[in-house]
Image (tube, rainbow over all chains, first blue to last red; front, side, top):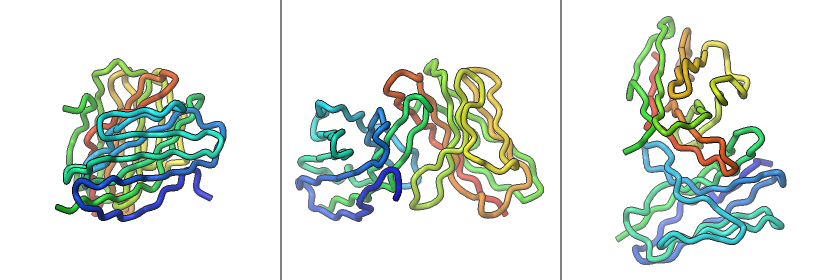
Length: 110
Length: 113
């Protein structure tokens, strides 16, 4: 079983739709959680860190459920520019190490 | 607008060549990382330097040799590579705070002929 699992997609949704991504992780010692976004042939960029209390940044909302070892990302009112691969990432502070999920491809159509 | 820079952007090398990839960060971070990314796959960790010391080597073949001359610079020396080593090589840095957010450079796209 992979340490971090995501639905690979692709998700193809119309502009303005709401889309949700889910991610599960297997190591209960995980201490930090992130969503990164990666455009084609570019580097991953940090979208947001994820906290147990949940956090929101504009149209993006991230949730963490430690009991279920589950992370989610919700994108509201999607824009064409949201088309990218979204990477779920889990970190282990003691090892300075992060583990990437395989990524979920999102395509927003006009 | 990235604060992690990498050179060169593209590199083509033969299997007998020796080349180096360079990375520099300007955020005062104390940890730096090398990742390898193949097409349609997530980044794979290769090496971690913490406080200028190698702390993690993910069983990377010796034809890849990292070097951290100071807290801002990270190099990856390449020698006798194979065509399957062709990939995007990403450098990242973090400040080792509790959350350990990592910030990536734009990468070097390497082709081994």
